[in-house]
Length: 513
Image (cartoon, rainbow, N blue to C red; front, side):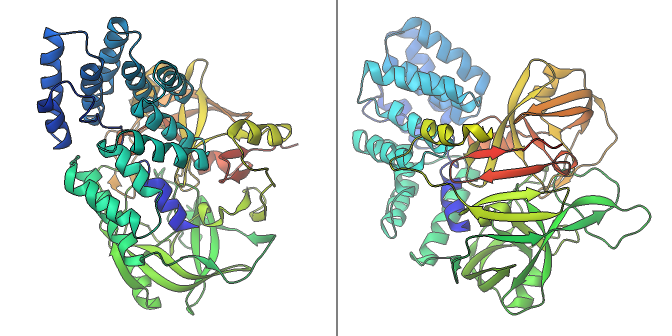
């Protein structure tokens, strides 16, 4: 349910673990780091290293400062220098794992964290890093255990405090987050997200949300074609009345909020929960709960919005009470009545049959406890499920472009087209001016280019060669703390049936005859 999604997504709000007071060889750079003065901290650590190249904690401080600045290239270089100088340092292997995590290379990150723990089983930074890997792999019970262990091993580590706080029940989570905000600074956007999240959990005060009115084991719902002008957009469709120039832009689901008339909302695997316009929120009597900005593709930054309380939401046979929705104060949803994220149904095995316009919800497969990723994969390997990495509601799917280029792509049915980052596009071919406008939740995307004849391969599916638009996905990569290389959008998803297991981080695209 959406509040679970909000909490898990908050795990990704800080990009890298901090260096503890105990680990630092000099109080000065550590104080600068805790104050959020990462450029100054990096310079201070570099000065120390120039005089003494024997300190693993100092190298760790430098690399983590660079990662906080999101200077991934410099962090890569400095972590390699650290490995060359101190190959037996657990902290150096841990920060090398941090670099791999930021690059989206989770297997390599896990290897480095485990290597660090072999050298020192109480290396808090390695424990914290491994917890983040497990969270991305949907191994949430194990991740919670390790977040708690990391905080226990190093209670002065600001990010260990933050991640541990998110696993706590109310009011303990609010108290721990208050402590984190009071003692550790970060960049303004991360601090804004943390304050908004804290405001929300204080407002909810532990009250359950999105409570099912009754148990429904299985249900099917009809999806409606949503039409819009034939322009390629980065995220949101414009469901207008059919006309001679209209083309399919997505699939809609009928949703009833409170006792109002039913509205058609875009079913969006790239969105979380329900998002509506302020006019609709006012009409249905949605009560404001807390401030909550909306973010997405585009150059305009976060869009002002808020969370609101809706007493009842009915979707087909499903009825939910005490629901939290997000409200946009700007007209950034096109003519859609709203968006509904597929994660609303994350307690089910979710099948979106795009060609046949059906949403099918079935029970999740039974698993033994305790479970791990290997066990989950073994139980479903016969069905050819593909492991995806989860950051809240976002599903990042390993994707190959052409022969050699690889990256993590969002599965986003709210995006009209397949998109690729400029960095990955540079490995595929020469980009050229496209003359195409891409519009997202955060406004218009600047400098949209295209790469000709690219072939996407993912989840046992080969997408025929096509021209891919390039968009800047750096804000998304920075926010999640891992590299996002592209988006698989509606233009491809409309041809297939896709099965999503949010609980275990698995996706199946059955072969079509």
